[in-house]
Image 1 (tube, rainbow, N blue to C red):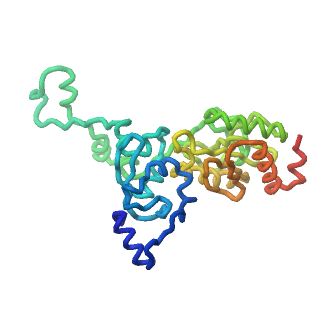
Image 2: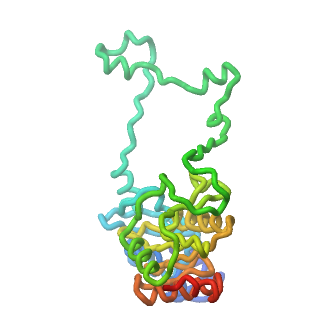
Image 3: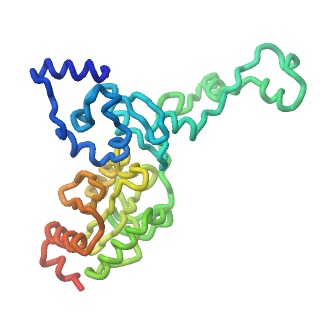
Length: 307
């Protein structure tokens, strides 16, 4: 169970028989891909203990302060998993997120007949009891999936019937998330010949709601997908739950015979054996990428496609 930072630190001092159980910088690599959390953490609010002394998996309550000034308490695991579907800075602070997405108040059900409610069409609408969609179904013996605790999944029907692992042009693929993806594709096209006009790969199993994946760059001749990853403007991209989605996507692509190379920037850690950690996109990055293609498919095959 999580405990306050002072109690947690004292317990670690006893168990490790040391006044400083974790040296400063011990967990710097684990936190460096979360620049927002590094900025939100302040040792003066946490018994003088710096963030790099705290393991990311520690069950400890920490005090954080967002850019607006809100103070809140959360464990390292809660903070690292906080980015979800939201793509804005308020995702890192529960109070900012609540202000950005206020909950719709639920009107209480009125007692007695509708005649007791004030006159007017709006008041009558509020006075009506809420409809329970489950009760009629239960009465008739037909319990919906949601009531049985079974989550129904809907897979997009626009994915064409193709062999697993086949690249194609998808109508569902989103536009590029950043201009750097186009620069990477153009830089690879200057050095390497590959078939253009594809933006998706047919999968064997659904990935979210589609039987397809949309890598940043597809090299059909080599069956290699290239992804460009950065933490984004607000430090939300490819961290926390988004990192788990990246790993799922990589497994899905490898399951249909493709290999994945991720160009990781912003001090993001490697996810796969062929990922490249770079500071930014450059000519050296493209050269390292081609060298990694040789490692995956062999120099004899890759050199055949060099310009």
